[in-house]
Every structure is written in C-alpha cells, then in structure tokens.
Length: 284
Ligand SMILES: [Zn+2]
Image (cartoon, rainbow, N blue to C red):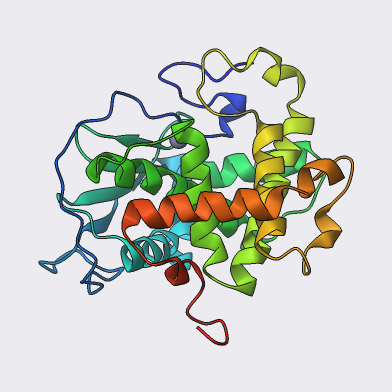
C-alpha cells in the first residue's frame, strides 16, 4: 500500500509523515542557557514550543479527549524544551488529520499531530489481534510528537543532518524517551512493538514502500528502536534480542550505534553528553 501523497503515511493511516517540503535555511544562534519555557508555554514570552488544540472533528472526539486528559503534547514540549530552545518559535498543533498523518510544516513552523492517530493505533492492535494499554497508546503518540518535533528542531536550528533525516528524527524520539529513565524505556519498547506489529499486520501493503516515502520500513524502525533501547543499557535489555525482534548480530553493534546517535544529537544541540541521561538517574 504505499504511504502516499506528500510523504504522508498510508498504512491505513497508521504511520508517519515525511517532511512535506524543503527545509528552510535559517541562521540561528543556539542558546543553551534557558530552560524556563515550560510545557504550558502559551502566554509566556519565553515559549519556544507551544501547544494548540484544534477542535476535533466529530469522530475524533474520544481521541481528542484521550490526548488532552493525558496531556501528551504538553509532556513532549516539556522534554524537548528542556534540551533545546527554538527561536523562532514553533507551534505544536493537535488536530483532526483525516488519516493524513502527523507532519512538520517548515513554512508555518508548525508541528501537526493527529487526534486520529489514537484510533488508528487502536485499530492496528485490533487488526493484529493484540491488546493495547493506554500507556502503550500514549507512548506511540509521544513518539510521533518527538519525531515531528525533531523535524522542527532540525529546521529551526538549521542542523546539518548526515544520513536520512527520518532516521535522525527517530533517534531524537529515542533520546527523548530514554532520558525519561525506566518509564521511557518501557515506552520505547511499546513504540518498537507497534512498528513491529504494523510491519507484520500490514506487511503486504508495505511491499511497495521505499519509493514514495523517505522513512525506513516499519520493520527497520522497529529493529532500530530496539537497537537503541538495548544499546543504551545492554545489561538490562538482553530480552529484546530475538530472531523476529532484534537479531543477535545487529545487537552486537547497538551500544556503539546508540552512543553515536546520541552524541550526534547532543553535539547538534550544543549540549554536554551528560545531559543525554535522565536527571532522575542516580549519580546524575
Ligand atoms: Zn518524519
């Protein structure tokens, strides 16, 4: 089935959207001093990333309620702005996307996140015959929030990206989750499982992928996320190694792979490597 259109995810709507147009080159001096731009930023002069809720379309009302009650965009903003300040500022709009998938629009500097991703994810798990907890569902939306925020960061900071920007954005999502400590590790596991499930459930539809979309395949993304999770703490996550999850020969390189990905982001953000680790962890 192909993810079609402007790089938007098809996959029965489940998936991600590529950057829809070329990155705007913006000169930018990165400041690292200020972390006061809080999650509920609208209204504060310092806010560099703020949340806006659009009115959901009728069928998305329950999804919108879920996102609002869990305050997922606000949580994502809090984590992103703890590491980086965006100037000019970016708006994170949550809206009904009609299956178009989330995106970042560099013309308006707007991260677009979709209420309907909630029910699309529920549908994926139904189609895949698996149960889905609200926490796992939250993790999936957070990954979208972080992934699209990464496109905004890359754009606003005018970061030079080596390799595929989509992979770099996934690495940012992994970094944001792994900074949350044990809870984030659990979330990253849920995210990887969701990509894995999408790969096996919608396998036939994904056969044509690779031309219309810049993202790695669902299977590749699942494996990469498990690789980062494992690589960040091999002693704790040996259980993710398996033939249909993280192949052992890939796992061997994951500590290095994650170290490099993490360092690339921290260098790009002008932050010391220690900041990549959750503040809640002992000794940090
Ligand atoms: Zn993307």
